[in-house]
Image 1 (spheres, rainbow, N blue to C red):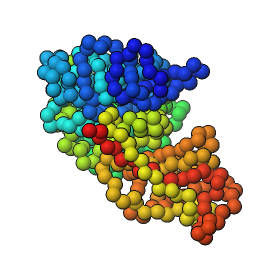
Image 2: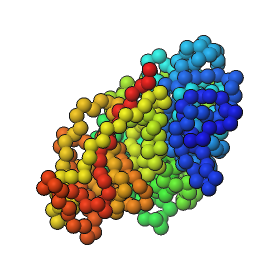
Image 3: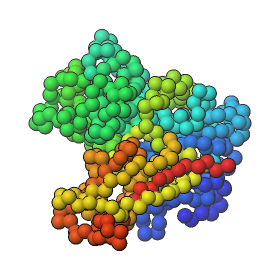
Image 4: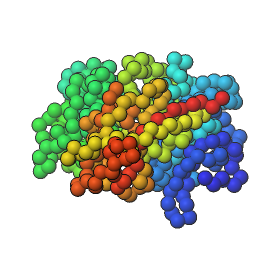
Length: 458
């Protein structure tokens, strides 16, 4: 990556910039642009990875309002000099206020945030735990408060009716399920990922539904009312489907756009059922004092989700892959970046020992040994061809030849014994290796397991 002339040396970071040909690229850099060399300085110990950060990594103009840019809208770390009424050495969290959008963000070892972005970190939360909650957790608490304000008195009070959470397998969605269930509501989680059902139920969901089940007759502006309220992280047509099925006096909070920014609806839910649609912005609207008051509430929420919420630990080296997975919808749960960590990779070759059963190619393997909670395992194909992929019966994104490398985090799918299958129309002839085993034909690419361990630099 190129260095920025005249920029202060802010240590290692993930820098997104635009090339001369107009393409956007990201990678590790030793320098980052610094907005104010005299401002507060925070040593970043952990940074949350949000959908907005993935958009920034892609150079999305609605988020990355200036390039080059260091993404990352929230961080937890140590204040290196007195600021915001706090002494040097204070443990802090830093969120919003333009971080990772108009100024360098948290995917860096050092951060110079505006003073108003800094609040104390609750002593019961480590930096990693705080960022497992982060802006997602703040958004959920702001949403609960707004829902309480907007719900008409006597209409579908706590415990009455079903409350829907869409995009429930994402980080915000999972926290929304836990918070709503913790408040005594009956929660229906909506997710298209079957592997997330056990986690969502453990977080408090009474049932889990697929988005397709929410579609009613598209010609009807209203359908039978079901939802007392909803938290929508998806937007687009799914939000329109939800609005048509909200009970009279119900409230819907819109907090995401993973499914699109258009809202193809009518005014009927609002004028015939008195439905309220409200938006939540955790990045700019809460004041410093309001955010400081929200963090103890997040700390109280954490013990109830700590042992259930899937949290992936990343190093800066992993940022690009995770951003792509998040934008594809293939990154369940939460991810936390440890900027001072390095990613050590060990590869297990899966090119040999395949079987062809007349319908699919099949490869069995055991769970890698010695994995720690901070390790992750990615299934990787270099020079991929075209094929559909499944691990232990769970479909993965299809292989295609548009990229020199295909990868997918399969940590949560691994079992003691595993089965990987590939299907392709008109499979190529099998190739016999010198050991007499069946090798995967070359057109499929070169498969491997990539074990990634994060090691904190001293």
